[in-house]
Image 1 (tube, rainbow, N blue to C red):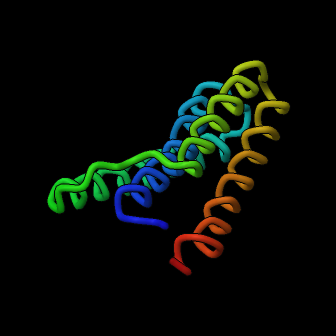
Image 2: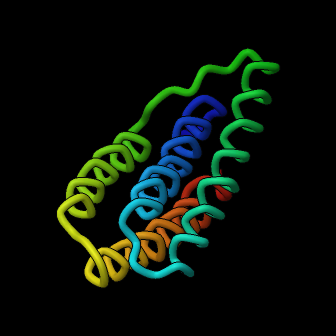
Length: 117
């Protein structure tokens, strides 16, 4: 059963699944458009994270990890390791694929778990 604390942990892990690879993309992406996209992802997801943390603090809620949030954390570590080993066009392709998959997973999690609960 999803409660505020577990939803918050999952949302936070999802934000960092966008932020951390995007920080790496600022350093490694060959495409200027992809670096612009990475900047946008950092700005938007950092803003979301800041707003969420303020709301949680006001409600006295501390995020609590769960199966989904821990899975996102583990997946992020794997993705970052993979991306660190790439450069140029290979990095760009892997980063773009990760971002697509990460956003798709977020939508699926919302549709299948969070919204129905």
